[in-house]
Amino acid sequence: MSGEYDAVLLTQWMPLTLPVYLSVVLGMRGVAALSRRSRPLVVLLLHDVRPDRWWPGAALLMRALLRLVDGATVLTPDVRRDALRLAPNLSISLCAHPVYDTYGPSVDKQDARVALGLPNDVPV
Image (cartoon, rainbow, N blue to C red; front, side):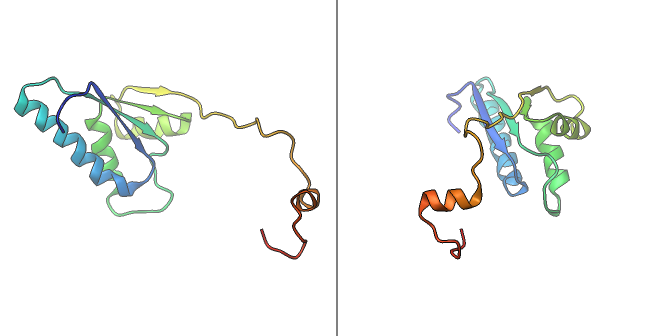
């Protein structure tokens, strides 16, 4: 909270962190106002806007956070759409999620067990 930074990147992917992030953003704004320093930019890396499991107040807290931050980066067009529904004026950049195709061709399950020395009756 010293204010010795230009930008803050927060990674948001679960509702549990929303109250903490709201506190952090509001705290940074308070410190900037009291110390007469410029306020750092706050950018969210949004993995999802709608939680996988329902959580009381998640939509309300997400809307509040999206309206407090300066911008967001999303990985999919669907998340961009969901974020803009909650915060229509939010500046959002779309950076497509990387494709992890550097692992080579898939290996048959039996061949993999043989190569690893695993018996067929051992759960993996």
